[in-house]
Image 1 (cartoon, one colour):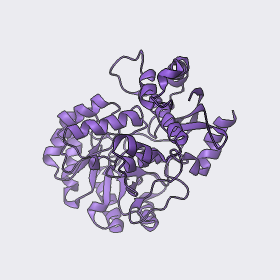
Image 2 (tube, helix red, strand yellow):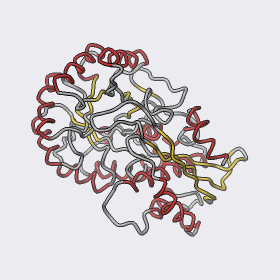
Image 3 (cartoon, helix red, strand yellow):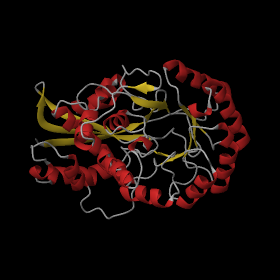
Length: 389
């Protein structure tokens, strides 16, 4: 099996929504296609991948460093013992001549290609991606359905509280039981009113998570924690700067409810430091690393295994990103759930067009690969043009 070419493009992810830190009006995303000489139904197998929302396209890193390294490598060095593309060897190839540390922009570029390689391998083996993950890393065990929650509740001046509660009611009607909303982008008093309004829709506090997108100062985060503690929320997500481990530890010491962090950490080393120094509690807190931002599913799987060695159950992981890749990892590694974006970051967010949410759970697609082709707008607008040109 050989990689014949790799194509990338930058796609817009424009939206009027905002969280506590950024708006998404100028956001872009890198989309990658890895072409191979393997055949399926008489056509060459092509794997697709893209980086996650909340970051920007990495065309320069892809074109100038990563793609040339792969294409210039001796082809056999990129294969496993069965002659199939080896994601771990390709991952190592991409990281040649890269200094340790400084995990940031390149992590997203590597992640996009890594996701595309895994998609191509699963298609070649004619297996759903989650089953491939299960076979290689979880002794063949997998979950046939996965707990899922919608990432939503963004700040939108045109919606107000009434629009926010309408959004949450729509999620409930669609089959979700756990919802998430943004905080930290308004005064605390206003955010408390928003939370109370949403609780009127979702019911118990355990049905609602809140996300500050790392936008609060430590002292403000503690004020939020104290004010929200009586609600018994599902979790308080990204309360402070992701690298301020001391602040995380202080919040964990004072806030009885779960916190959720990890989406803005992009390496195994950063993840290990979080667990060593962030005061995280393995009996209640959530780890939300983003598989397409932390150097791809290859590195994400290493993070899950590292956390296990430190006493963390896979059930405390819930991949960030709101896309099919996280769903496959959650099913194949038997994680605690995953996120989805049914209304925002389209057409990249969310699962296949035929996905059904039942009692807060969703089943991974039973198609070869990751199933990105089951999203018609994504395929027709962004993936098919890569095939054609």
